Length: 183
Image 1 (cartoon, rainbow, N blue to C red):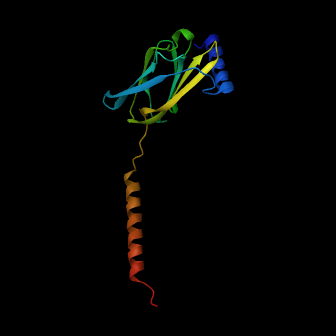
Image 2 (cartoon, one colour; image 1 turned 90 degrees about the vertical axis):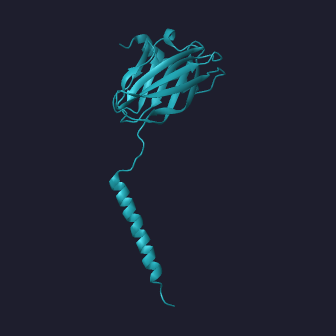
């Protein structure tokens, strides 16, 4: 159940992001994100993300969001205790959000997030939000990491159509050069 405290915390975070934008303060937010993918359950891949908030960081990590394919069909979602996981089948993002300052990822700490998907890894955008509510310091780290994504593989009928089009163009150009106009 979402508490009133969580609601005010989310609104304050959103307002700070809108009002200040990322990187408007001099706070240091130094994080690293790594992923381990392993085959799981026969036809699925288990994705395990390790988020490290550096000792040199001055902000707590309060949110981790990852772009996923709408067909990712994520299952077996897990994150740190006290973090809200937001995902529904068909969503293009999975979001992990700390519900209270006590559960934020403090500097010098690591946290693990995981889920499984039938899709293999491809590059996905991610976003990590650092927040210090008392000083209203907000920083955003973003980048790309392996995530469940659909790779574009042409269907056989598409390849057949493409091949016949190329052959037709080749045939047309050969006939055209043979039938040069007389001068």
